[in-house]
Amino acid sequence: MSEAQIKSLEKQFDERIARDEKIEPKDWMPEKYRKTHIRQMSQHAHSEIVGMLPEGNWITRAPSLRRKVALLAKVQDEAGHGLYLYSATETLGISREEMYEQLHTGKAKYSSIFNYPTITWADMGAIGWLVDGAAIINQVPLCNTSYGPYARAMIRVCKEESFHQRQGFEIMMKLANGTPEQKEMAQDALNRWWWPSLMMLGPTDDVSVHTEQSMKWKLKRKSNDDLRQQFIDQTVPQAELIGLTIPDPDLKWNEEKGMYDFGEINWDEFWQVVKGHGPMNKERMKARVGAWEEGTWVRDAAMAYAEKKRNRKEKRVV
Amino acid sequence: MSDKKNWPLWEVFVRSKNGLEHRHCGSLHAADEDMALENARDVYTRRSEGVSIWVVESKHITASNPEHNGELFDPAHDKVYRHPTFYDLPDEVKHM
Image (cartoon, rainbow over all chains, first blue to last red; front, side, top):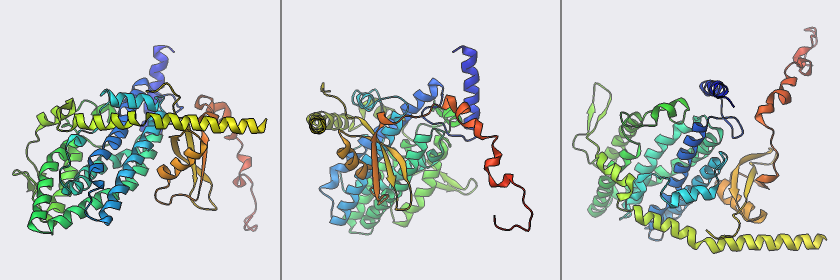
């Protein structure tokens, strides 16, 4: 194809998206569109999969059966969300094995938030309330994104996600209304998870490199700073309601703007964690790669068994 | 990675309730059709979304090419006589 032809196809493509038409797997698409989507969607899938680890840590130690079944269901949902997203990404021509390889070698990233440790039960509350809360804010606009399979996967994810946040908030509420020690535990979890949750919504608009192109392709509908403001404005009153204090001395309602002003985010910490120096990066990858490698014989045995069954059936037919 | 083959890809179709058709809802990997059905149950019907599941290995699906949409679908555009509104009837004829 000549350069002029590609230019004209690209123009038609952009116009289709501007008209809110969806792009489906077999449609022509610019190489950059394909690559950007593979990167973002696989990163999203990886985050769901690695995101199971910090919570999996507490399933056997949940304080009651009610809490245990809920946490188990939430972690199972995360596995499901990872699978929806991986299969949606495969429609762009990358194999599942290739994506796993990229995750396991560190070539592909996942959300930095999962590189923090979960040291008390209250962390299960803080993760559901704050981390899933921030994730929902990020994900809802994606239900309308231009790539059909991604949009459909996100609709399923968002439908299932709201129970995650509610179960987290309920844990926090219960602890905050409990004994002084329990309340302190909840406050401590909020103190540790607040800032990483704000960072989860991505670098500030002035340094974010992907925003403009992603906006055009509807991979992003609101800027990082807008999403962050939305998250803060909706979360602060929830903390007040259960008597917990947001760990930000500069946080204050701005009557004029109709939103909260908040303190400086420690972006050095964010980049350190992104680069692999967070408290749990090594641990998370060790657990993930270990699970994959130790499962090799199971996957191979299942294939061998499937083949044996198939052969037997064929023989019977002959 | 082992030298064995990877699990193939399957497409999943779910009937949400009797009376409705099966609808494509996504795909998954499984070693064989029994495992594909079990995995589909866990991945796509955790909240009672279905009463029946079909799985078919993705390689068995033949899809039309969007580049040929013109010759495939355009011929239907100018056949308005296939629609009831094409025919002029007097107002006295109600409900036809």
